[in-house]
Amino acid sequence: MDAIKNRFSKTVEKEVEEWNVVPPDEVPTSIVKIVFIGLILLSFVAHQILSTGFFTATFGTLEMILLYGSLSVWIVTCALMLFGRKTLSRDFDAYGGLLFAAVGIA
Image (cartoon, rainbow, N blue to C red):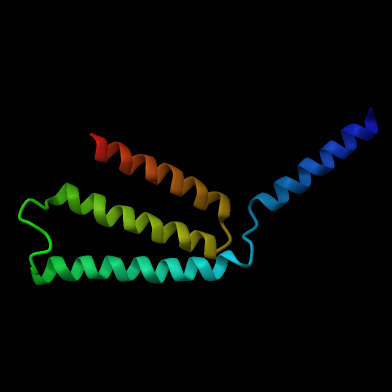
């Protein structure tokens, strides 16, 4: 019984140690996501500042918060992955997504 318990404990400890480790292949992906989302964000800002007609007159403060906020949450989530904070990135992504979904539905 002790052998089974020790093996289970070692397996759990190994999984917990690997839970917050960012795999090397996710680093370049996070960089690409930050650049791509940043470009999208800048294009929206340019459309709004230059009054190109992309945004209508009904595009108000709430809509700006939802649009720019959701894009900013993605950038922060990817930046946290770059700094090796995978667990915090998951939490921020989940709660940020729920917050924007709740406000959008309301």
